[in-house]
Length: 485
Image 1 (cartoon, rainbow, N blue to C red):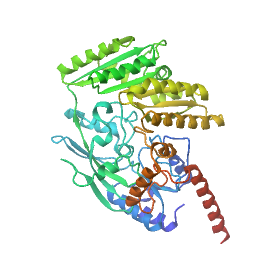
Image 2 (cartoon, rainbow, N blue to C red):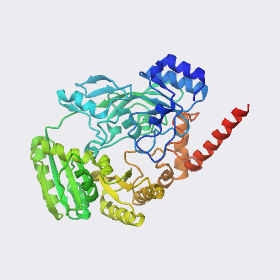
Image 3 (tube, rainbow, N blue to C red):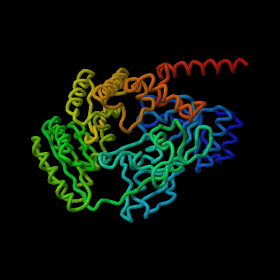
Image 4 (cartoon, rainbow, N blue to C red):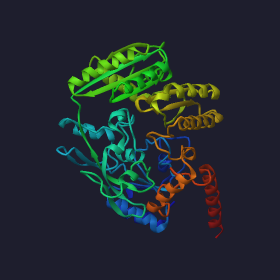
């Protein structure tokens, strides 16, 4: 609980309906979509303006109360899990589209504005917002900024950092600052680049200016079935090698196809195939027709089982809905699952998928694969049964092994889901101790008291799990001491 005077101050600032202290209501905020580790927040508050966020942060600085920002809670790495007993600053009520400048291709949104809603609200003028995470129907643009989210079309259009041009930010000490440049190049140091992807450890974003794009004149979508994962993987590399830059290249393996075909978006994937590629090209009408034919030709060079274009927009939407449904669909074939997120050079797709299959056999846990094949961003989903205690530990260990393989192959431990708490120990695999020390120094510049989302992204000298155990002991003895006095 918070001190009574702080509770009263927050209720006077926000209204009692926007401050939660009751334990039964707090339970909904004990984790994000990474459910393997949970912790209860001290309270949850719901600001509705930049000024309210700044006032809240100043109160917490004065009282030395830790806090963290939270969007829709769809994050997959535990970035919004309150392990330090934080107050959660929920931004879901800051959900307005503030301004659209169609002439200059810009929009300003609050952080709680849902990703897909932006495209829907500007579609009547022929515009859309390009970053498209699988959770885009529910995830917020503020959360996308925190994780530097990607999506299926990031191969051609880039990730969130390629579309954010300016931010209004409340620093961890309560100052309101503006970063970036709405038009033209950034002047001075690129602090905007530092902020996007910082996972809520450097401040709380309250307004976001993004680029909006004109919808392409023409789109062609191709579905290709392969007898082997190797043939599908080789096709991806060959497409790029021959100068074809699709808007998206997505791959699913047989286990994942089984899962999504059990959902409402039933495509009818053949049981005898090992992998499917969903390839989309877009642009001007004349160029797209030629590019789609080149995609078909290259697929045929790699022992494709069958390949065809979508016959109409309805079929195209079905294929994409099937792909977007992949994560939740795994719940139809497994009681529990853990989503991983690593990156490798796309030329090593065949190799790493074979290694993942070996690890799956070694651990006795099924792994369903769906990923952005065009840029080598893997999403292995590790299936386990949480009712069997040892299986969660095995799943977490298998996930760590997969991430270490990604680094070994010249890749990264995350492409778009962030580090949070899930991958924090793998930061030591990705970076040297000197690298991590400099990242920590940068964090301290913005977050000197370490009150804002402490214990995320950058590992401390001790293991985070050990740190949390020690913290729990300290809190236990502190509480006992208070009772004696």
